Length: 314
Image (cartoon, rainbow, N blue to C red; front, top):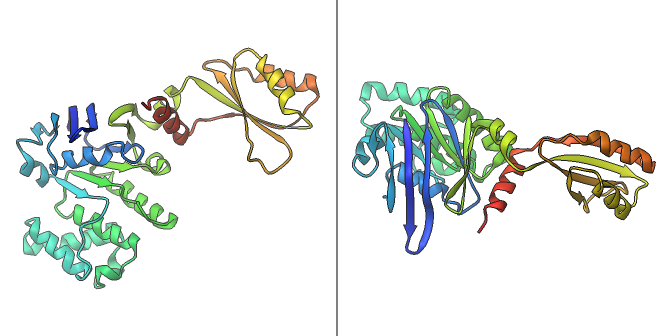
């Protein structure tokens, strides 16, 4: 449905996007992840026809953003990081205004507004001034305006930025419901949000794509090693490092220096494809250390993100 080919964008001498390529399929919820300044917002602004690329292009349903911006905007809803709201307007009046700008017929306008107020959970604030709403409700109103024209594609730039945990959970649920019917592109640097909401993620770092796949694929493929967590009592750190350093397959030993209890908390990095838990346990037993915890760590998206953005830093 959407194809990004060799997309490059310069701001003067600064390269914000460096020849990136990826596709977005119909009905997919895609997360664009990356640190602040990675190029996520620039990519979205080109996708929504607010910026022109320096080179390369984006095609949406076989229309490129350079030659067909008006047609693309008609099938797309966009919620920028700062929602385009008028604080002095009542919520209903604002949505009616958006409906007019989207060309909805008068007889269809109220039905559409009522539908969106239910989906976005704003029924109870429809006759309140936007300026008096909480940040969470303002984001909901922003989502409603982005969906007013019943777009095929919804583009959301940091939709939960500045919200509290309860508001974040509510917005995520709304996005999941929208994603059952629409193609959604979501930018964020909140990794738990992407993990809970997205079918697939593209990680951008310094203007380049460093990973592309669903969460399961990234967890399976990212990094060169696995990890084992070990907590020991009555063990000396220097002796532990010496013993575990001799176990075949151990690539690194990290000690948690922030632990509040006297026990020794270790993370062993293990060569990919090796299961050395038996050897590690026998080493512990031979030294008569008291074992309090022993488990393999499943890589979280946060850990993968740190690895990718650190390893690919220039």
